[in-house]
Length: 399
Image (cartoon, rainbow, N blue to C red; front, side):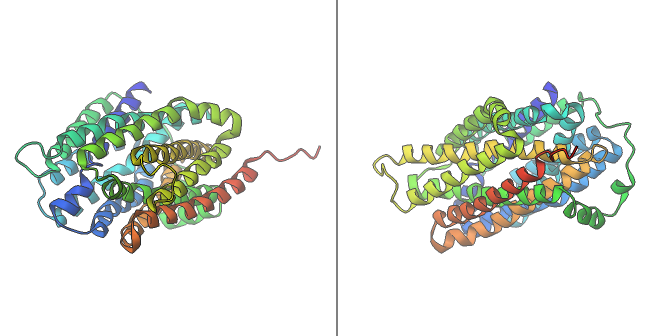
């Protein structure tokens, strides 16, 4: 398990290195609109949506390890391609390829679920999230510092760094032992994709799929608009943006590396989803109030930004791993990878929809439109979490 978590950390450090530079590359270097930038982000998420269930099902069939190794190799090649791209068409193609490889998230979570007892899954999903968060501490800071380094364009050095991290993660993943090598696929796992999708929508996993969709649809507004908010509200450049994303990574580590265990013990997995969603919607509403100039403390905009950022990050940090743990417990053991991949795929679909909408919403009036829309979706997530909590409560005995 430590090696797997190290692989996750290194891989997401590479992904995190791209966050501060990607919007500036599209908007300032290429001179394109925020809508094009959000569509570039959405192309990655759409490819991830398509590959997540496919890679999960493939890992049920041939094993987790070969799927993980192959996806990391493709990811490294995609980063290299983008590093040497000089037009938006090549950039779209490279990000789509990277998104197809990033569908390995469900495979990694399936490895954790394979090896960990159900009572411990929330803890290990939290460690998985903490590994991601640790990667996002180092990655954005390095990406911001390397932006514009060398004779190439702004994005080249950070993407070369990301490729190097992917190759390092690939080398380490070779040491990971197979966790599902001797499993036989059940008849349901062999069914066509459409049939399995319909079966999930008529199963207890349907509400989990809806919850993942809402959570990612909402958070995509933050993902797409946060850099624009920093640029418009604080006049941040790529390097300063990288440092603030490092703070975001620290928040994720605090939540998913320890605080989530306390929350799950107190509220349960589904209750923790609701708790996190409450923090998320508070942060989103405060961001809207801040962006229109009505939040207390206008003389200290950086302090305001840190407050709303903390609320948003803590909210997502509690919700996401708790939802993953609850979904893994509800999924069938034999088809764990495929089931989680399908459910996570709905999250990726929500992310696609959110990213596609974020650009036009920003052009309507600014980042507060995107955050306001995200807050409305998070309120729907709270309702879904309430239904899930009722569904997951043990039925009273009739005897």
